[in-house]
Length: 125
Image (cartoon, rainbow, N blue to C red; front, side):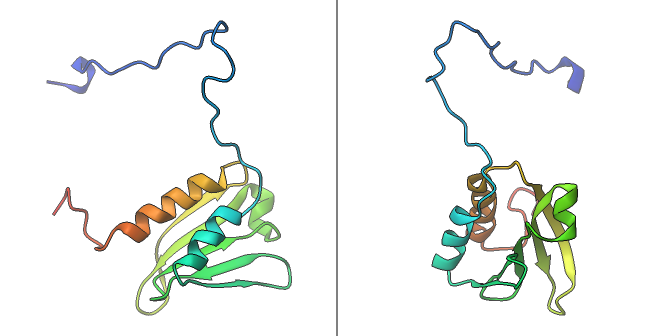
């Protein structure tokens, strides 16, 4: 079977007759509260620099999270910076999130990383 032959589900069409209270999706508010609370509860080192940017490092030093509203990259829309670091502190991979993403989505992304006990993908190994 080829990909073009797959019957992919289609999203329901939006209907103006649906009440607006059906579902409210999280919106970006520009705050870091949910992420920082979660990381603090997990024992991460969290510091705020003199420019009001927030930097957090996992207890093992292998993951860095930056909430950087005052960094030059934020002018280009990169508010969140997440990096995995090797034993020498060099980046292995990184992910950025724009200023419009809900902090709850960033917290969910990080929670999934924290909950994964191994570097190997269980589906690929």
